[in-house]
Image 1 (cartoon, rainbow, N blue to C red):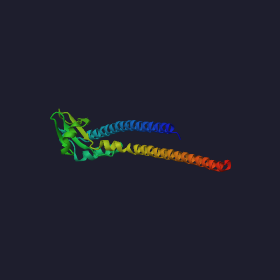
Image 2 (image 1 turned 135 degrees about the horizontal axis):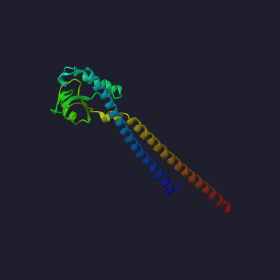
Image 3 (image 1 turned 60 degrees about the horizontal axis):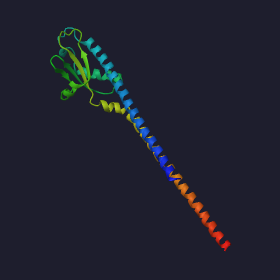
Length: 204
């Protein structure tokens, strides 16, 4: 096999391998984005149901959400609705008073700073609660990226493994062809030498 042809084949394979890696990266990012959107939709649907249930359970004589319902059951209710919507996670939960700028309840007081910055903020104004305040149920998911990556990393690893297998098989095939070429050259040289050695005595 000529050197220029070997370089050409290796270059084509390298270009194809790089293209596959780039395509896989773009596809992974796209899948991650889709998973993120589905995650947000699932959280939104779960919280709509949670707020609907809370509005039905709140005492009509309550004057403030702090005394309206049992906060100990809030975490389990949210976790249950999230699981129904395909999200097997237990977020940090907080009830935030927007007027006062403080939390009425937090399942993890150490994470209130992150909880306050969380994008998962849902307006909550219980029916029958006499209060001029604006209240929000806020969720914080510490392991959101790990949850989303868990859905995509298996296919990524499989694709990378297949690319690696193809690369190994390609180089094994290339080496086998090269060795066969060398054996053919050695055989040809041997035959030529033997022919020359036989012809020389006859000519003499």
